[in-house]
Image (tube, rainbow, N blue to C red; front, side, top):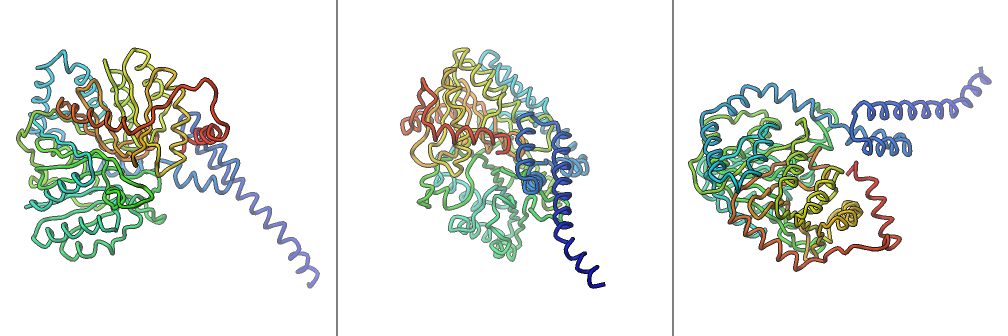
Length: 495
């Protein structure tokens, strides 16, 4: 008996190694099989397969956590349950009237706005909401201006305040907003705050206790809790939306936190572009919040007090374009590609994260070859060096085609703006990268407003004065920078 036990004990290490080997091989086969069945871009598939083979267990687990877009299935189920709500919103008489007014405005200037009409029709065919006319749009170019405008609107709230943010920090800036929201909740105003569970991972429900005790509501978008059916670590809600009384709305690139006010030395001053809207387009931003809130909190907000459409407040034509991983085809990629293809004279892009896919690279090069003046503004200092290095690996291909690239050196450029022909503009939360195009929930405003375009053009060229222009190199460049850029570029399908 003793010898038998000894023999079995001596076999244990070998059995353990065999068990580990079988588990490793099983995970590797499962992960690679799943990658092949997803039928993504070949480079993305190869990058995942290479990572899984190089680090079998870690690679498979990493792929399970961020490689699958499983949120689509869950989102489609929720959208199916919401179908009556969505159909009611889409077929409402006020939307039809607002759309007709927008089309009349486009047809009034057929020569000037033909490209915009084509883009609006394309985005509508892809499933986004149609454009609306009669909006008043103002752009804020500093954090102080943005925060003051939002807080002023909150102060005047009579019915409800809806906030949706990717990042809401539990710092002095977050406390400033929390105090104002709590005060309004105590006055009987309905306050709802929706934040992304990963982007705002430092902000716990305990931070919002004063607001909750005052009657406010807080929800977290897709918490990363494995035992919850809706958990997902990769597909995040990157939107920044505020709607007050269904009368005024805000959207753009500005999050809530001290760093966005330039109060943190390590990041320096931040440069954002945020919009304030009044008029019929507010309804479209409210719809985005209502759907996201239902997804996270299961509360139906489709009543008249939330969904009323405002009369004309200005002369801007606006189309709100919500995009996300639950959509097929990838709407944001199509819209950006079409916008670049429809340009006649100039393209100006400001983006903090530049990791273009092959289609976007081709569109930028093609525009430059057609004689379009293409300028891209990217920060020289960023909170993600890997993304910066990956973006730099594309510089020479673009500069060689005639694209002018400028690296902003006066702080962290965080604006997400595309201006076409000094006439129409796209402003929102989306970056020029694969994550925004395919994985994140984003919202973009397509705007026809020459005054706004003029203001943003002036701001763009002021930023260029604080930038370094990228020059065409005759040789490959220094060894270590090019090595880092090439390595980062290899990882672009995963960024």
